[in-house]
Length: 361
Ligand SMILES: CC(=O)N[C@H]1[C@@H](OP(=O)(O)OP(=O)(O)OC[C@H]2O[C@@H](n3ccc(=O)[nH]c3=O)[C@H](O)[C@@H]2O)O[C@H](CO)[C@@H](O)[C@@H]1O
Image (cartoon, rainbow, N blue to C red; front, side, top):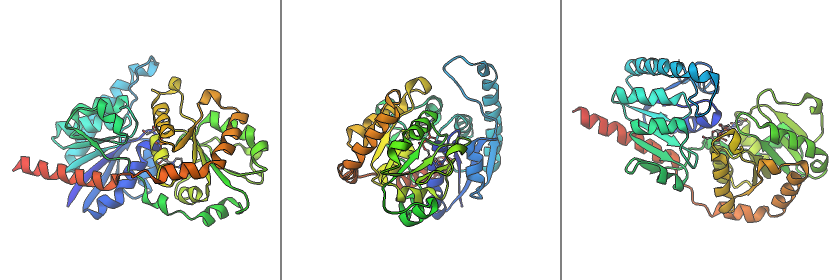
């Protein structure tokens, strides 16, 4: 039996690609375990899949000043020793890391235990966590072709991003039924990234009087961000975070309004969903979503609306424009030949396992 440890967390975007790999890894004979933080979103998402979960101490490494900068490095060092202990006990043949801060000590510990670690970068440029992990990685998978310029030669593998296969088989009717919607008006799905997005939530709610006469709206607004005051508004439904229902909600959607997290946008592309992207601004991040969204706009897959330009008016104008031109967006997305990320990554894991066995002989 081959053994693999998956790691990654902090936001769902560092977990869902790992979940997408699980069925294929199991089919290929891997026994799967997961290392994440004690209390991050990954714990909830993985434990309910009945995959053995090991929590380690995790801290965020920042490039800007924060009082936590004095305590977090100790948490990361603690996480490293905990990860080493877990790896020595589990003895995996290979590690796959989807990134996020919790993954750094795991990849470093894997290197010290001589276990090959494959890491994945889904954004255009590597984040700080992956930058720290790159020197210890066996291979680095990436989603955007442009990312290769920032990766060491010989280690980069263009894989695309693994997408949960169940998202591709949603049922429009079930999605409409779940929302209490009908088939008469087109449906907009608003999804603000795995943590929600306050600016998008506010603009959408303000635009409701203009949008609701023509559209029905599903609003996935993030944990704790449901607005109780507009709970009973016909044609408008809110969810905080959606799990299995997402496939049916996506199937019901004619148009999506979203942040530009790389996994979410690859899912829209795979499903050929016309979309409006409002990337997380550079002040609140390293600006990776702006690059992701610009690339998708350039390829004709998305309509880009910068957050500083979002108002109820600009949003409803964008919705009408994208809806009118939806066929043009759909055609552009259809002509994109996506790589099969799941097969590429599982094969890479096998290659790592074999090369490790050869080295041991
Ligand atoms: C604030 C932040 O740090 N954002 C980053 C984070 O975004 P974030 O975690 O939002 O990542 P993505 O948009 O890439 O992925 C979100 C994932 O969660 C799923 N989902 C979301 C909401 C929901 O209710 N249910 C659900 O299943 C989506 O289908 C998708 O698979 O990781 C991405 C990938 O590295 C980066 O591009 C983003 O910049």
